[in-house]
Length: 82
Image 1 (cartoon, helix red, strand yellow):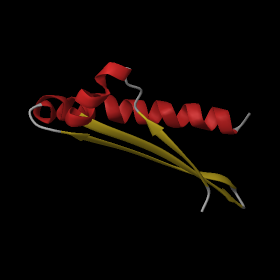
Image 2: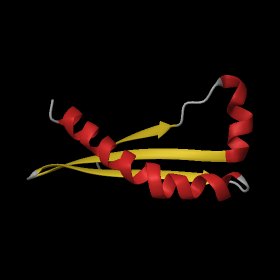
Image 3: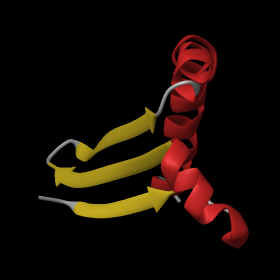
């Protein structure tokens, strides 16, 4: 398996306990060298608790997440090609 980097959402120190009760975010890139180059797998997982989930989840899924994932993969590609 390739190298892994775990990315946790940045939180202000005083908000950590509250935020843990409302949501969890995990992001993961796995890079694997292949004969053709580097295979990159990207995973993001957001877990929200109600009632926050009822409002935020559709926005994340339908608006932000798809756009941000494509942009993030382009940023990662540029970093890997340096």
